[in-house]
Length: 336
Image 1 (cartoon, rainbow, N blue to C red):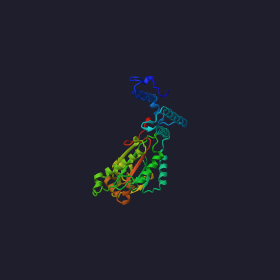
Image 2: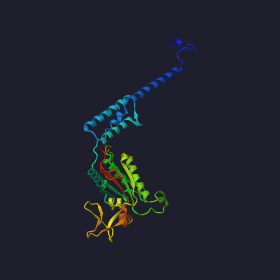
Image 3: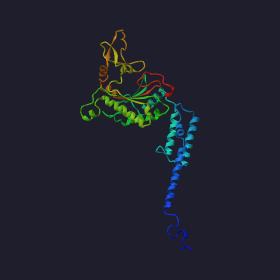
Image 4: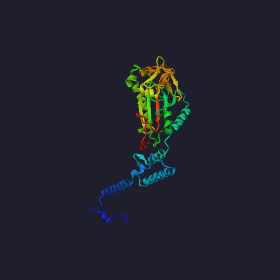
């Protein structure tokens, strides 16, 4: 019996041709492909996206329900053989979605909370007043990081301690998706011109305008890489036009008012912000003249210490009703 051959297989033209097996395999693969495509079509991308929550936040119970729904969706997708979404492993995609839910429902930090967090970071890093300083103006709360701490000389390359500081700030409060407040990053310099030699400095940064702008842009790019919302970020380069000890109002106006014949001196007002002595009129009621910007800039760059202070990055965390380039106004509810 073992030597007998199948009658159907004897002779030419008997039985199925050999290529039928290959065709059967191909049809099986096509069938599996179309089943997978149908499974993807039945998933609702909008539903997955909606699981990220909204800007108004949710209660803890609602957050828990959203997280459960995400995990349920993940299991359903796995059962259908789907291993990637948007070129990400499905586990990573779902983890990021869950993190988004948590982040979006954190309360938006108040200015005093931001100041408290910044003060803690300054203390933890043991920074002194020559390296970092907190200020306030009409726009909001600001942190100033001075040149010798933040950047290499005549470069837009951040120093390691600058990156460490930014990492701490980002982790503390800058990635909350519900926070739409603007973050303004300013680059400032002293009034020393870019040196002619070596030529590489002038070729890259013809003036302090280019250098200060490049430094502000470098900080913005770094923050974006750390998942800060790009729509919140603004970069400005001021060159030497806004020394550290010049008030916001004076900088915007383009001059300061000083008593006739007096040297330019700085006093600290009740608010703790540097103010120019004799604004409006002096104590004797003598009218004041306007001292224009170049005179002020020269005065506020007259020492090594002042120049070091003027070479800085300033990051402003704006108050709710401030939009850069305008006067404060009431932000529409849908943009908060």
